[in-house]
Image (cartoon, rainbow, N blue to C red; front, side):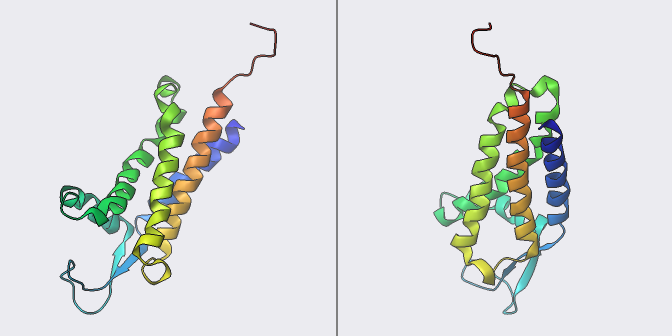
Length: 153
C-alpha cells in the first residue's frame, strides 16, 4: 500500500505542476471585472493568484469565499510532501482531511461559477491532482498505522 500511496502522490504533484500552466478558466467583462468584451483565458497560476488576491475583499464580497478557500487549498497541497517525511508523520495526520476539504472547495467552484462554460482543461487537471493527492495521503497514513492482533499489547 505504501508504494501505491507514493505513486499517487508523485502523480498528483506532477499533475498539479502541469495544471498551473494549462488554461484553467475563461472570464468575460462584468461589473467586477474590468476586462475587454472578448473572453480572457487564465492559466492555472493566474487563477490561483486571483483567488489569493481576493482574500482582503472577503468582508465586502462573500461570494469570493469558495474561490479564496480553493486558492488557499493550493498551500495545503504544497504541504502534502511532508507526509512522506518520517519526522513530520504526526503533524501530517490531519493532511488527508484538509486535502479532502480543499478538493471539495475546488469541485464546488464548478457549480458556483458556471461549470462547462467557464472552466477549461487546467481546472480539471487541478481538481484531479487534488483528488489523487487526497487518496495518496490517506493511503500513506493508513500504511503507517500498524495493526496489533487482538490480545497482544
